[in-house]
Length: 496
Image 1 (cartoon, rainbow, N blue to C red):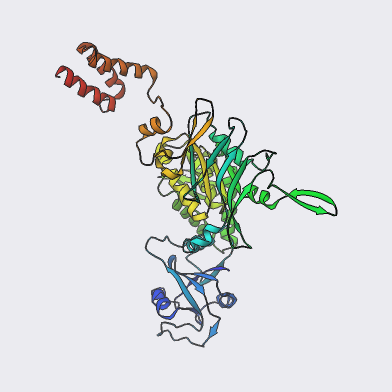
Image 2: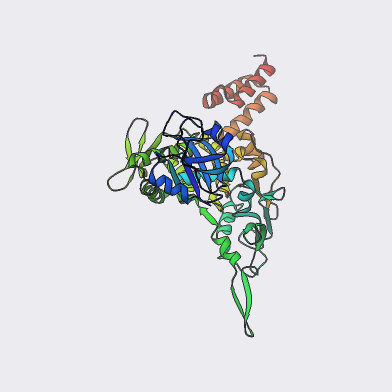
């Protein structure tokens, strides 16, 4: 099956009857004025190929080829089916007003076969969104991890599923020392560290022969396959081991320090758009700028892609028009590029992505939005993202079923709490109820706060209460919740 994108009008940009044609005739075709290359490509189309019909950059519909080529020698532009050669199609879905512009507004007809190009990704994402069963069957998703004895984990179970379905997002939270990063590292190195113990990982795998998803168990025994050569028993690596290892990607905390990979990726991406899609460099620049903006449209980023310099270094620009190399952007912007944009532009599909502390160097407003971006990526690219975090903003933005809280009990064992509800809660309640009591005010001020309320309620000492109140108001401002509460108590107690 090949993806195509196609303009469908009789060399008249004001025609705008594509949808009517598809609804009434279920046909697509080319007329006498179309290019020789377009004719050649149209004739090479196969049954079940998928075609995105567009008018410039405006997507009209996604259709499937269901008929062989017909040549009727027609070129009557007064007819809605004006074209000379045609194919019967089935409309899979018409575009609605929410669907974004197609990244390639030119070319009468062109294939999209390179998975790394935005045209392929656009069509593939649309097609997969209307064929969910196919999407859900493919790739790797972890359901359960059991660790028998590794570092702080002695007899440890954690589930990554809900209602018997592997979750697209898992958020690991907990105080320091509960093993959040260790879990990510353990999953990433699971194949390398397999030993003769009871540790295992259960995961979904698409079985092509059976054409369905099967649940596999990877442990020491399943990582080996036995067979005989004569009377001799031989052990070799099982395919399940290689399958798991090839479908895990780990982004540790220090990822944002190395900007070089993203620069190389952007450079190669631009070359593909120019050389393989026959665009000019200016058109390629616009395409990647639009691609970046479409990903980060909610983040209010102050920079945008500008160009490549003569040394093929990526140049960005800010809203003031200042230009600077990629390694000069802020650490927070580097983090977004390397822990989010990297995944999109690499076209990473059907894999498990492990991300350690994605909130590092991000402003709290960006922390509140990053999980939504990862959820979008997991949905569009059929991946599972497992991340560890200390950020109450990320925790509060996570759906309740995504959250896994790690806690240490009185016997120093690590336990998993998976039924705490944090979604949409205020940050202070997340700090106290989800992450354990966090002293989010300096200790010296907590003591002042305690002394103030003691002076009001127990000592009934107005002068001391007023003195402590004024000191705290100077520190926190008159709109702080503690100040407002103390002001109300002073009024009620002393009639002020």
